[in-house]
Length: 375
Image 1 (cartoon, rainbow, N blue to C red):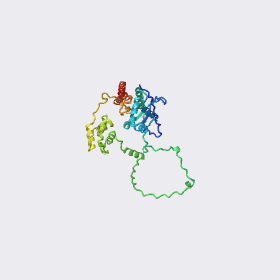
Image 2: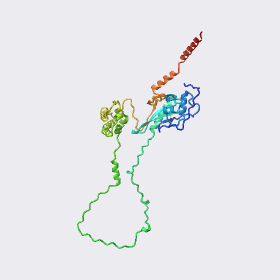
Image 3: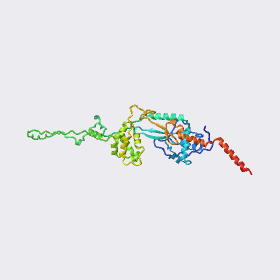
Image 4: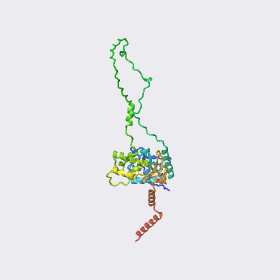
């Protein structure tokens, strides 16, 4: 049970107006169910944790929550002390670090957030809240991206006939209505066989010309091509040119036909690379042939694996507040993984000495004082 600390608490510094905000989707997120702010908040925490918690509690949603940034704003403690304080606040039930996947398809990315609660909650409350948050994100409708309007495909707007306003002819330009002499009839040409006129080729409509130009555009690159192009970004030793990616695309597409994704393909090709790769295209071609995964029967799932979630589902993983290892909320009680939780328990036991040891030290010191008093 937590004991109240009666030492004088350090007042946390005010949040500066220019405190940096995290990128959209990152940073601090306030959890629901918090009690109103009062002077007794965090009274059961040690001085350092109270100092850090008071500052974090006044940060707005979306503020940067990295240890480096907090240590920069809190001059009394360094990064290691701030990290230890955040770990203690996680154990006390005030915060959880999570990572969420956003986007869909090949544009999925991870965002990192810190859920904060002024009111301490137990593990069951946090697990329920994070599960609800994950379910809400999974059922949230995602609006499809709007396709940009193509001016060549858009049909030309025709004004209705009723809106066409005829141009009025000015009086000075009005045609003369007086009868004029009929023009002289030209003499008739001599009779003879008429030469047949060559038929003129019909002009192609401009809409069809634009459509043909659109169909001639190159198609979007396939997932196999994009995965091969990403190899050089993951490891410079496997940098491929555009021609190399096009030549190796059929082999990479065979991997996708067997049920793997781009992440699996890139991990398999970049694992265990030698110190130097002399010819990246030949090296990748050999690995594509040697490490191609086997065919999986339809409807087969590996033992111990669950059915994969649909592509539109979101995922939310809790991060260990100490080492950053991700996992399900149930697997990280107090926001700590198993090794960090064991280390935290050992440190707490080391900082709280046994009462018997305290009594033995006092007796030893009293004996030393008696010996010094002896003549």
